[in-house]
Amino acid sequence: MNLILVRHGEIEENHKALYCGFTDSALTERGILQAKEMSEQLKEEKIDMIVSSNLKRAIKTAQMIHQHHKVKIIEDENLREMNFGLWEGLSYHTIKEKYPKELQKWQEDWIGYRVPKGESLAQMYERVVECIKRIRKEYKNQNILIVSHAGCIRAIISYLVGNGVEDYWKYKIENCRVTKIEIVDDFPVLTALNQ
Image (cartoon, rainbow, N blue to C red; front, side):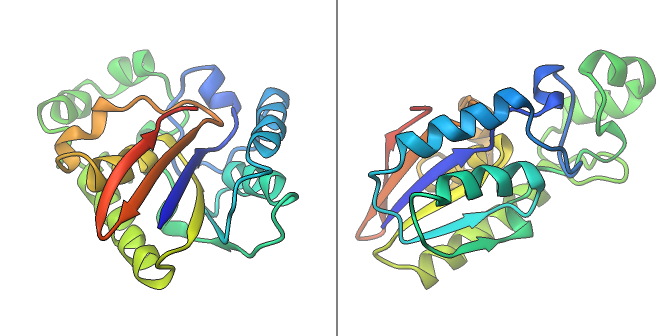
């Protein structure tokens, strides 16, 4: 089995360094261009199925890649970015000013602390892991393109080739870049990162 992981193209919040999880933002002009370039990059890749986060930025990226691969696109809400709750749309500086106590709690327990009205990293990690387990079970020996978000892709890598959620911050995931994981006999190997 081959997992081809692609982060969506740029959105305004990425450009402005704002927290954006469940907010359903559209691609910027640059993000659309990035998705077009990714479509060209992957046009010769063998893809049997596309599974995408159900947020606009991921779906649009998946649709643009899809033009060279007439396969089914499945939308899955479990591949959404982490829900940042009260922090959605805010910069780190603003969060530090408006929510210093919550930020302190998150810094002390970045895995287990749940942002008010949002979710914890542990909750996001578990839903992504369950989704990947299901994909592996249903689409054995296939080449699956997953279009998702930086946090989800970090979670997938941490789960399959890292040491679990503790490795989450060890991987930088760039907009519209490809990460590949090949799974042979239940042994996952990272074969590409941010290509």
